[in-house]
Image 1 (cartoon, rainbow, N blue to C red):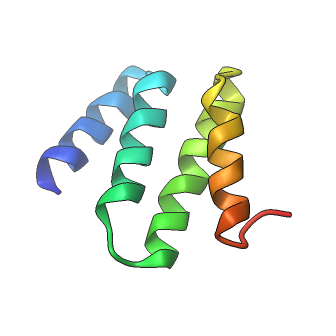
Image 2 (image 1 turned 90 degrees about the vertical axis):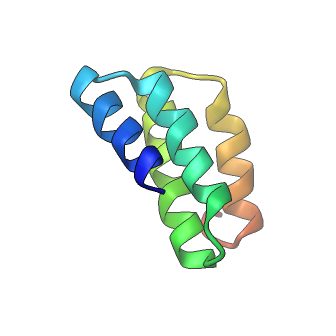
Amino acid sequence: MKDLDDRMISAHAAQDRMALIKLYSEAADSVNDRDASCFFLTHAYVFALEAGAAEANTLHARLKAQGRES
């Protein structure tokens, strides 16, 4: 997870929203805790909304499937 954390920090520093979407999605997929996964998915979703990225639809669907979004 250290490598992922380092990549997230770099993406934040560069304000690279597309990288942040991918990295937070990767983090969501890499944890075995539903709350932690949804935490990361929510961040990915917010970055996708801010960027106007098509991934927002998929992320929204994933959050809905977890009961986190209506």
